[in-house]
Length: 190
Picture 1 (cartoon, helix red, strand yellow):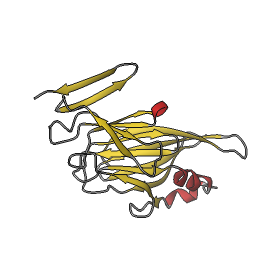
Picture 2 (cartoon, helix red, strand yellow):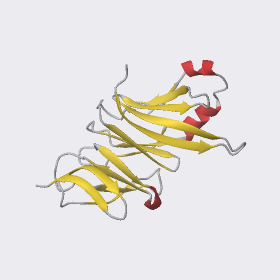
Picture 3 (cartoon, one colour):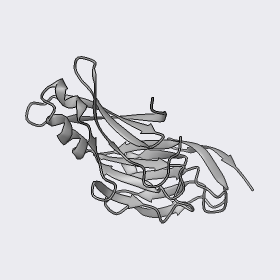
Picture 4 (tube, one colour):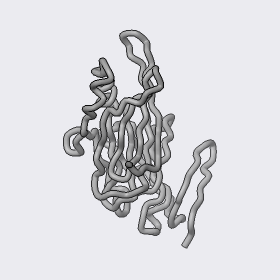
């Protein structure tokens, strides 16, 4: 049995025939799993991406465009930026269910688009929030609780080069965040 805590969906439409395929990205104790929900309702296990550092039960995934952003509470994990075309290409090769026995083990050194670490105080986050219209990933739950671990705003307009563009220094720790016209947060103050 594999422990997990988060799942995020993504769909991709094949240009050759207009068929839309549905995928799941599953945060696990020791990495991220990628699956496809087949038209029959079966789940095809396509592959997994190991963690950047140690294991942690909290792993959070968000998608903007064709890139997954994967954060974790494990110190030193940072945010993995993963191009989902790798998963889609694996799915296109699925001609029959016998191939399900050979999921791909993606490599953190060669299969990541980028690895973002610098803006996270200890390289960890509890949760990620995506703001696709602004090409922003917002990391929350960074530690230690200090004036640099509230909301950490990361510009991902260029997924291969994420950049910190701001943070809320007045708040020690933000556990959850909901974005709309206003920011709604669950926070701790010093």
